[in-house]
Image (cartoon, rainbow, N blue to C red; front, side, top):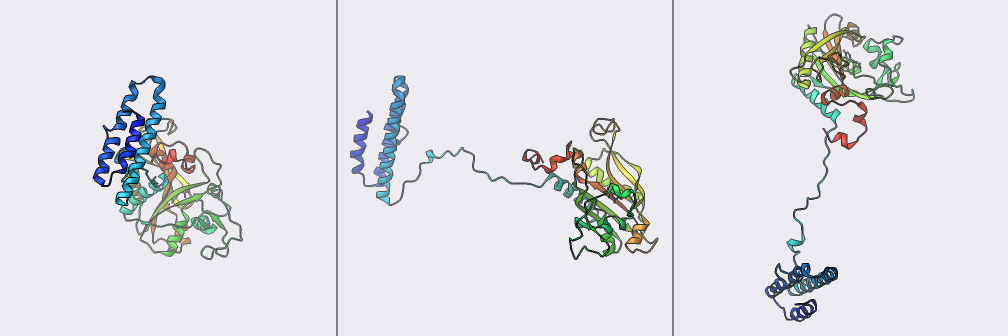
Length: 347
Ligand code: DAH
């Protein structure tokens, strides 16, 4: 049957239809899998090449016309539009998915480390990023003119900035350069025994490069009670280092100077890349520095008003970016703050 006669036939047949069943029969006759339209489409491959396109277009137009006539009839019979044909919906197409975000790698590492401390009975405390000069320096035994202040130098706020909670008569305000000032805050407001970890953001006027940023994150920790010993510090840090980097790592304590601890030590772990043999990541040393630590200086206890000689304690501070870089093999600190999804999606 040719296109013209099919057109004429549907026009005459559709008029006499009055029941949904008859309409369905008509639909199958014209649009079904073996219907008249399908027969026309099936004949295309046998046609001469030049006629195919024009013929195909005509068949399509006819198909649309028949679909329209049947839909209209359906509305006339039932008062409802025809159900869309399942075959016109590609159920194999992927759906429209909603992109779900996740925590930043720095937040993840911070949470992971804090969770381990939590299990050991430490309380998690946060302090303000805008600090007093006293808490950031003087209270921690870093005197005004002492060269050790250079290491922790920071950004000062204009004296006009007021905050009733922070402003003390003789203390300027600054962006804290470490999380250690929270030691002063906690010790001033609570009595030992204390076991506290302090995650948070810190600031230094460092030029930005692959290993420096003017803003980064630290986790501070400290324990104060009667009879706290250096061995308590060692045991605690070993649990943390092994939980984060795996049971196989070794640790070493190197003597160091921090004004707020005495004795002080920097803590290294055996290089996780070369297992201590020496490689470019550890600068051929076999060791990676992960934190600073020590026994809290008696002058710090004096500054917070603890009775002389009554308590001892240990403290430590680690850089979260450094730990995350070592853990995930990241070689540039700037990647954490560029918000490039290609980087962030990997965690
Ligand atoms: N506050 C030091 C820094 O920012 C890190 C530190 C070292 C913290 C030794 C401590 C400590 O509590 O005992 O570099």
